[in-house]
Amino acid sequence: MNKRNLFLVALIIPIILLFAMTWKPLYTLNTGKTITLETVPVDPRDILYGDYVSLQFAIEEFSKELLDPALIKEFSKHQTGKLTVYAVLKQEDGDLYGLKTVTHQKPNDGLFLKGDMYYYGEHTIDDNQMYYANFLPDRFYVAENTGMQLEDLSRQGQLLAKIKVRDGFAVLENVQPK
Image (cartoon, rainbow, N blue to C red; front, side, top):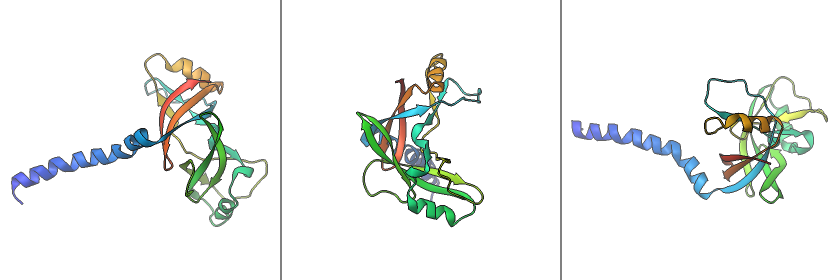
């Protein structure tokens, strides 16, 4: 290879990498389905970033009834770890969606989100225990001097999030008061 070809390869590879990193979010924004999810109160601790709203979503906290029995069996196979799980969503009211079930097998159809669920030590299933998984980004950056109002609404559980979803991947578009 001559110097010109090496230069072209060195120039093209970073461009391809940048395009590859942005492809999935851009594709989801353009072709995904817009849904609305409820948030629950959370208190942020990091003040090093610009104005943002800390978010936790109602679908990320769930009881035993929403766990797929096959997922419960999967817990018993391992002592600790991280499982890839899927939140199967159901339409509740208009654009508002809620959690139908959490499973470790990717659904063949319907609307779902891909996420991670951590578990530690010997796992016993308790009827009163709450389970947590991470399906969505936990921060939404906002314009200067608008974060405090939205953060107060977030602490009160009065925010809704507009999200584009496609094949389990989600892009957070906006947050708004209920």
